[in-house]
Image (cartoon, rainbow, N blue to C red; front, side):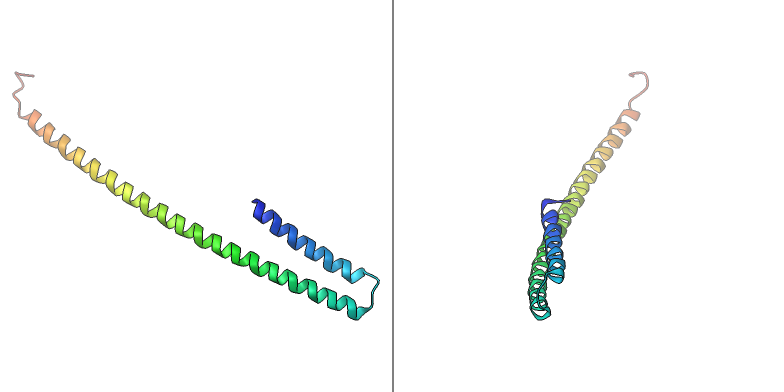
Length: 105
C-alpha cells in the first residue's frame, strides 16, 4: 500500500471511529445527531477530495502508459526497419557470393 493510500485508509478509519464514539457518548440525542452529521459532512468532503486525487492520478498514469506504448511502437518499427535492411543486405551478399566460382573458394 502506498503512503497516500495508507493515509486515506487511516483518515476513513478515524472518521468511522469518531462517528462510533459520538453514538456512544453520554449526550442528548439532538446534539449527538448534529455532531454526527457534521462529522459525516467532513468525511464526505475528505472522500470527495480523495476521489479527485485518485482520478487525477489515474489520468496521469493513463497518459504515461499511452506515451510509453507509442514510444515502444516507434522503437519496434525502427528495429524492424533495421532488421529488414540487414536481411536485404545479407541476401544481396549471399547472391554475390553464390556467383563466385567454386574454384576460387
